[in-house]
Amino acid sequence: MPTDVKRLLKSPAQSELNLVNIQQRDTMYKEIPPSQRRASRRSLFVPLWLTEGYLFLTFLMFLVTPLREQAVGLGLLTLFVVACNLAFLGGYLFFFRKYHCDANRLTAPLPVLRFAIGLAIVWTIAFWVQFYLDSGDGTSLTARLAHPGDSYLMRRQLLLEHVPNSKPISRVGQLERALSVLYICLPIFGILLWSKLGWFLRIGVLLAMSSVVVVAWASGTNEPLGHLAILVVCAFLIRHYGCWPRARASGLSGRRKLTMAVVVIGTVLAFALFMGYNLEDRLNARKWYDPRANVGELSSLSFLPPQMREAISHVWFYPANGYCGLSYALQTPFEWTYGVGSSSGIQAYLEDHFGIIGILESTYPFRAQDTFSWPAKAFWWTMYPWLASDLTFPGVIVFMFGLGWACAKSWYECTRLNDLFAAILFAMIFLTIVFEPANVQLLITQRGVWMVFGALSLYFLSRRFNPRSPFRTA
Image (cartoon, rainbow, N blue to C red; front, side):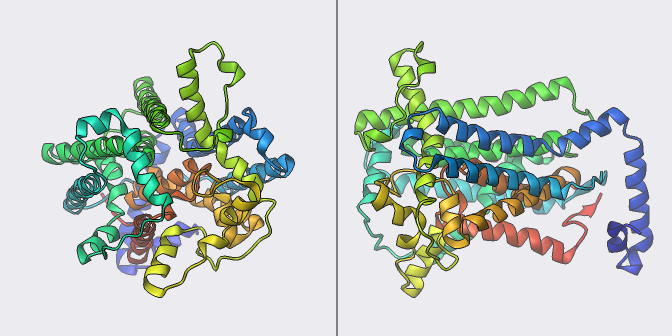
């Protein structure tokens, strides 16, 4: 007897109903035409194509820039990066070593979901309004939107000078951080359940997302806009390839494919244009980085105007410079950081509540920066040295295998089982992969730590109360 059937029959009182559900699932699958069935099978590997293509592309961007000449041990660096990418590939394929198509349509109680979306709207708007007020210097919003580089440089100068925050965190502030998972819930729930929301919640979702865009732009911060763009792309991918409302009935039509392509390409292009404008504005304000770290002018872009060529070089530098730092970390001896070296957010809690300090200075980037003159806080190192501070570099390869397996499992559950908690988990994994050339993005702040903890808690608690799925069959 299949494992899923055995699991469903654990409750004798519902065995008859569960058997009916299995029969309905098999009947629905048999009614799917073979062409759509093959398309459904191919869609299981869409995240794999995107992530592997992205990881190899960012490394190729590094290899074609002058940064390659500054790297140390290029052969070892290439071998390690390829091993990590293949480990992710192996973990993803390991989950799908046996293909099962589950046609069940699972839903969640709409009142609960609508309340969660409303709470996420309030949290997002309140957080970003407060963020704007705290980062302000008396400059008008219009001026900050026109010159976001000035705001960013002011905040960065405070960070580099290690200005302490003497104001203790209030109970309200602690609650706000504990609810950080709502930041991911907003675009995921809002897009996947758009057709089930009333006009009031739809306006609230759009208003909350707009507040993120406006405040992040005015603050000159790329990461929040990058997070939002990634979450929106993930939500549309899940909706496009899953069984969500108004998604499965029309099939993978050409019109839907075109719409999907326009949304994804438009979102990425808009974010890239903002990055170019923002970085150019930062450079006009002050040369804040070491000139030797610039990728220079690429020969393939010589036909472009100088200003456009310079802007593209700055954007190109972002995903490329981390591999140079990784090459330095691979030449540095290992020193264990007690399992928290990869998370600056956890280190901040240890320092505030237990007085434990010095862990950050023991990580690979901080120990290698003095030897190779590559500042740990000014440039990127990829996420691998931070993880290796806890796991060693061979352990990071094993970690990438597990991350690939988790990516495949969450994708399968959110597209085939309509599992919203798995959708949140998939979005977090996808965000981690996108920021692979930079750092462990979700663990560098205390809010990020709470975000990961909240998402994992919701996911595993849903399995505890209902091993089949967190939702009931519609």
